[in-house]
Length: 327
Ligand code: BMA
Image 1 (cartoon, rainbow, N blue to C red):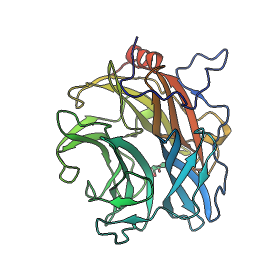
Image 2: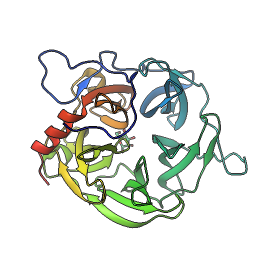
Image 3: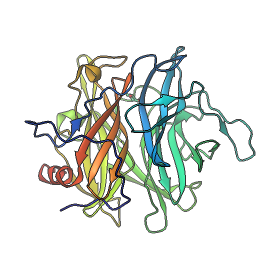
Image 4: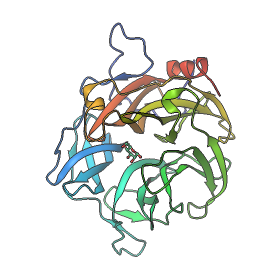
């Protein structure tokens, strides 16, 4: 039986798999969790990140304003399903309290490492690159050094140091809609200086991920290794299609990919995933886990318009990834 190594989260938002369905990942009945125009001045909220906080949940959300520019908005929820959002973007400050708000911000990933919550997101650094900030109270957010040069996206920190080093997944890209992309892994002793960059995983042969891939939620520590959910993209005559896949990385040396699912685990099938600002997108960014039950709740962006919630159980998810592995 595969187990999650981590904390219990008895109030994880979860529903059992619908009767008659055999896929390893299913959707929450409350989907989509957000509607269009969710906040005054914000047209769409999607590709967002949720963490447990003081018995409830908070999140950092990608909010696309009426001028089309994305910014990060703070949200809170008692149950992880119904959300209240601030109506102004998060105000980032530097170490001296001076405003440090970039021109745009999107696709945040937030994870707690040793008691501090770190956010990594895509932002302007003279071109699209990764930004990083930290908070311990979700009231003040301190901007840190950008961990990468342009062009880079899909930055994801591991939830703990491995062999004493912080680990970061990223996806070098270009200044546009990037018709290529593999996942890399880097390490740092201090979250400032990054090195030992390694190619982790290339785009896959199976067609759903044959254009590019990018990391999703922070890797989940399990008894079989790091469970890494990611997005894979294919191109069609009508544009890109984004699906979710899964891989398992070695727990001691996460530069080693042990297993990788040949098949997608989630692909656009519901109307809110197939129709929206960008059709045919499921884009996972966060996962809540309950170590006691093995339950996993995956927050994903749907059609660049809504927040969706997908559910899974670790034992079955890892079994399916292993059984369908094609490296
Ligand atoms: C990617 C990113 C994501 C977005 C996706 C689909 O390149 O920009 O934010 O969800 O495209 O449009």
